[in-house]
Length: 236
Image (cartoon, rainbow, N blue to C red; front, side):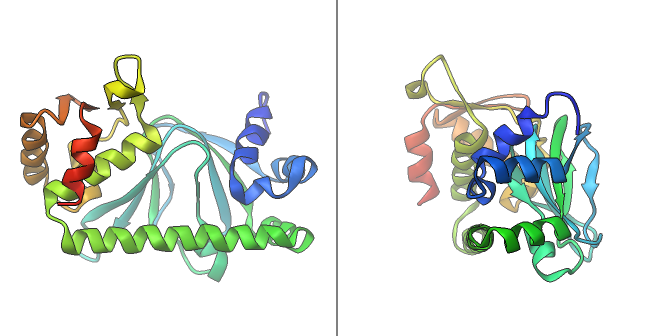
């Protein structure tokens, strides 16, 4: 543990999985785990590595990356402060199903499988929350697969932009009614992988939304000028 680790207990208190432990249980979990900083671009772990720890994002941003047999990489998700990852491998003891890469300078808290199982034994309600967390993960992946199958690229892009704004966006122009700014340090290749498209196709889709006035683009920063229009497009 390092100086300033009140941040660990603060974040764990906001995570449903740990909030059920109460103040004393959260403090115990924080003391049993460890935190580490990762520079942008560093792999936290690779697909196929042993799955022996649960992670919580304290600061920064990570990408969930899946590598196909052909060597292509698909960005499955982005995770920010208060979000967890590593649950699936903890459940079955199998290797990691995807890689995790720091997309920005990031600080992570991790807890070993053994300690998590001990906490579940001591606090049965933690098991319920763990299962709920897995259920939400499965639903997200199912929705992503359905979107890829049934939505065109413009709709998928609009939906992902709205989701990213909800998770990581900041108000634009000083008020929520003015839209949202997304500045995740994601490249267009990252965003293309996130929506299941090539980079040239993504670029065309971005400019189509910009031409409609729904977004504005400035390098890696995207301003959502008309969130309602993007929501409507995501259902088209």
